[in-house]
Image: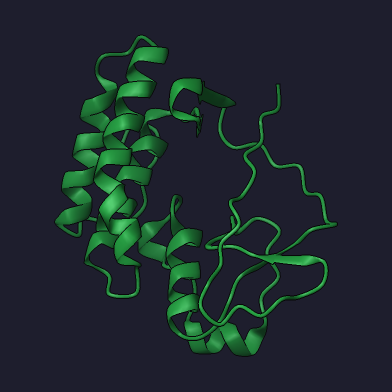
Length: 170
């Protein structure tokens, strides 16, 4: 099996067809090319998010400011996310297997996005149930009953705005 995740296509408002490219709701920041004028108007990547969801938040901000995010269909960039992929066939999910500090940062930063006006309401509406499913899937698949607590601490800190660098042992 593959250790990659395929991005989902997205029909964003104002996204005109571009030959050889597809509009995406968000892209991972690895391998991203940015127009410097757009970067200046959208702003840089959030340093307080540090490691996870930095790219998701930036792409939502770009869309909200009238820009769009595109994937070149003919460019291949192998990129491994975490230690591999956890597949949940019954739900059609492919989740990156990450160390606890990365799962915490992911949950924290996603929860922090609940308070951002430029994050779409549909994203916010699916976020908490999706985090719960992820916490349970990781916990059951890895036989680690403490993992839901990692997600819960992340969500709690994100909602309270406790952001910044995280790492092993933090």
